[in-house]
Amino acid sequence: MPDLAALYPHTRHAHIGLVVASGTLFMLRGIGVLCGARWSMQRSVRVLSQIIDIALLAAALLLLATLQLNPFAVPWLATKLVLLVVYIVLGSLALKRAPTRSARAGCLVAALAVFAYIVSVALAHHPLGVLKLMNPQM
Ligand code: HEM
Image 1 (cartoon, rainbow, N blue to C red):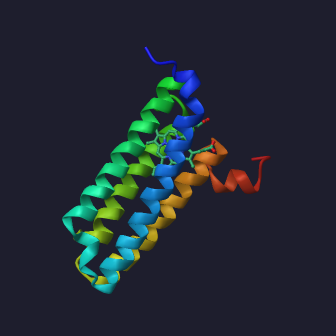
Image 2: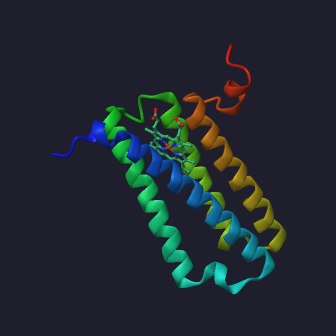
């Protein structure tokens, strides 16, 4: 059985690195779709994006196991999970499913805003995220 506690700093760094990779690739693909760039939806790029997202979630699961946290019982983690679903839906609309270019642009901006808010929830360890970071008394 691997020593999860000893791996914790690496797992956390991997999670954060994959967050950066996932967010950056999504933003570039979203801009690419709006510009009509074909590479955005190419199979190789879609597969790369899926691999990064699966690895990100695997690192999240490893962190939960290491810290022995139940994401449904810890408010900031439950908030992350709900917002992750919102982000996935908005992301799918932004890259493919929204009917018009302007709708895709709106969904891209909304998805990136939700993503940034998830990061702030993670940093604050609090569902209020950025609001809590700006006002620690809350
Ligand atoms: C788009 C999705 C996600 C983003 C942007 C994200 C972002 C982050 C960031 C920036 C950190 C570092 C926080 C710090 O410096 O302390 C972090 C840590 C963490 N994340 Fe995520 N995360 C995401 C998904 C998830 C999911 C789905 C879970 C599980 C429910 C999760 C569980 C954790 C845990 C347990 C930590 C470690 C907190 C600690 O070390 O105290 N993350 N996340």
